[in-house]
Length: 247
Image (cartoon, rainbow, N blue to C red):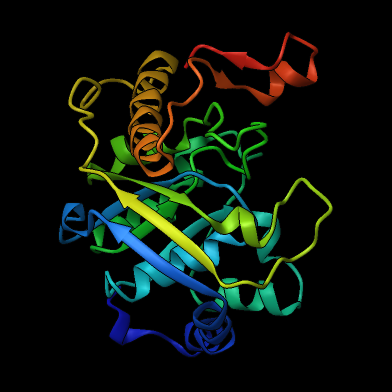
């Protein structure tokens, strides 16, 4: 979907969110040349409940595309403004309770076939890693990429956590104006898993390749190395050490 063909609900979201985004943040981005024409998956790290807004602004303006976010189906229910905008702007609900994972992604595959831009957070939620590095991811990004056959472009972002730290009770920190930094990498090479049956091993390998690409870009953005092992919230909940497992 090109930016020029937005519907009324999409335009309402822009009217509501663009002014505070411009007033309260500034953007620094490198790597736009890595985003190919046509259908593409943008896979990003998730550091704050604020970052979908600044990421959407990046896709809408420098990229001149209308992002379609994959989001949990609960966000689409009811008569609230957020739910109405999510439905009206054709964002994509994913019911993670659906036993058929491929069917849950059917709308996203169809959007990609039409040449649209789908944004996904492979972790499925804001990172709980103490240093805000990407966590161990779900396999939805790999399944979507291998079902659709479109490129997966890694997007590293940093800065939204200064506006709102989702797991600390600091509230919104609107001032001073915060810098949102993005680094976009080349499409991930998923050829070792292309055309294979979508087994747990295949999905796991492709998912790790995507997350490794995001982490490499984030290391450059932050100017420091990521932990050798990726944080796994399930291990942390079970009391298994510090929650870190090999990527």
